[in-house]
Image (cartoon, rainbow, N blue to C red):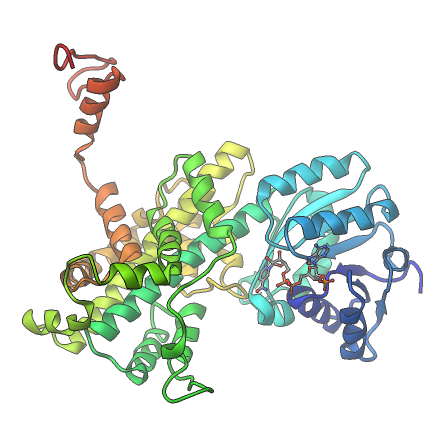
Length: 479
Ligand code: NDP
């Protein structure tokens, strides 16, 4: 079988195997290759009579593809991609398109694009979201690189993407590392969403006293309305799953220490580079870091004073807040905080696009996130509409219809943050969202004092309200 196959997939782990089956289902012929041979044999068996070239070597793999070759790599980021490029490169030719469809840092993608362009190879970075099931049945994809290369990939990508009434969940993001960058921001927003949901769970469980069954019901109800999203939907389901190894629900048997792979941290790092404020996303990363030291928290819980979270339910009772009112307040807090998380992510995309000349299309990004990916949510159609009707919108929260939404959520949002503080329950992301909101809407902040302090100790100068110019004061002789 030579020069026949439409596309190649290198790397048959969780994502590669499923994306390759998806490609085969859509009627494309493909060649597959994996560093270790067993996944290739297993894939050939799973593909049945579909047109698949199961290749044992890179030579066989690259020989099997139509020219110019289109190859998707789905391998471990970093050294896995380096090794795969090194193995493939001697067998590639000018004009071939090599796509890294894993989670790579955008700057690494840009370096590889430059290096491979010397050999005429069109290197392409593409974020893929949706996990195992998305890859199999239709992911959301964020491709970036040379536009002409995208046009050659598009006939396949548009078929294998999640199909939403607004179109397939894939679109050209921009040049260079734009695709991997958009995926990184997607993941940052995902971190924010997940942490906000976890905090809502904590407040409902510990202040409201809701059982897992009641939590499942609450999240299912929320999933019928404005909070409708994949993450709320799977959360409702998680509360119903029994522990296969014991009594009760599986969730209660899971260690309260979350880990991460890096895209959240990358988002925070790049936000700092671009001086963009993303406190909800940053708090979500911090929350994972703090949670990971379980032993330390157990030790410190016996030392540091404060309200006892085990007695949190008494706080709502003392304030006369019944369960129904608490559930409504938590729903409002989650919705308003989620808006802040998306606002921060979209703002970071806007700033990165200006800085790196990517010309990112925000409504189009919101469109392709409407299905297939982990942050898919009903809210995204409003975000799409907000940026489509005003491309210069300086902050998502200023969209007139969202301003009205936020007006109606004030009481519940503030109640949840204050109740949790009183009860000793941490709400890193929910309170960061509220403080972000209050900061951007406040005409006068205490930053005058920061200016004064900087000028005091470092002669950094300050500006005045009533006239222009950089001024310096000798605040204290001899200090
Ligand atoms: P898996 O761990 O399931 O598969 C990893 C693949 O990388 C295998 O083909 C493996 O080959 C290959 N590989 C690992 N180390 C090396 C190495 N040192 N040199 C060469 N090849 C190597 O990963 P996933 O399929 O889950 O992830 C692939 C990419 O997709 C990653 O970048 C990941 O971050 C990203 N991604 C994953 C998602 C998920 O839900 N799993 C969602 C979105 C993106 P071998 O079989 O020979 O070990």
